[in-house]
Image (cartoon, rainbow, N blue to C red; front, top):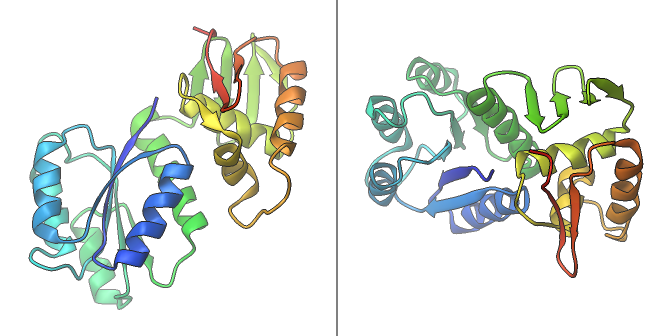
Amino acid sequence: MSYTILVVEDDKNINEVVTEYMKDAGYVVISSEDGEAAQKAIQANPNIDLFVLDIMLPGISGLELLHCIRETEEHRNKPVIILTAIGDEATQLFSFDEMADDYVTKPFSPRILVKRVQSLIRRSVHESPTLQYGDLLMNFDSYEVFDFGKRVKLTLREFELLSVLMTNAGKVLSRQQLLNHAWGYNYFGDERIVDVHVKNLRKKLKSNVITTVKGVGYKLEGGI
């Protein structure tokens, strides 16, 4: 399943960077560069799963948007990350008082931001530290995987690969997307290393759920 993120940032370069990193992590992204357009997007898209809001925006501020989100029936319990250059304690405290879930100050690491998004999505959507697909069960707290009830020993890379496949079950992910997720965006090695780790995953899992899409990448299917 793909999750949708609204990114509201008036700096075009930062908006593009955040948007591309989120897309590479497997998310659907709606982006906006001003508060009024963002407010319209919030009202028109009830299926947004998470919000990334800058504070200093043309028109309507990010904090006003946060208040709007918390007053909207469809979104009031959705996670919100404040992404801003304003780092003073008073603004941070006010943001949390308005029920922001996280507060990230600029400059920031896009990779860490992706991890924060993944963590909040898991908590809000799954409401538990586990994710199940067919006979596969992942526990994100203990970093354990169970297949047909038996624990499977996976490396960290294998766990991360399986995690993004399960989170995006049914969606084809390119080798580059999988590489970015498990190795990080600063990895510049051969993307065929993904094939090696997928091969190892298939050997370890009795569930035959990882499908190769020739010329594109991999997806999870057949386990339900």
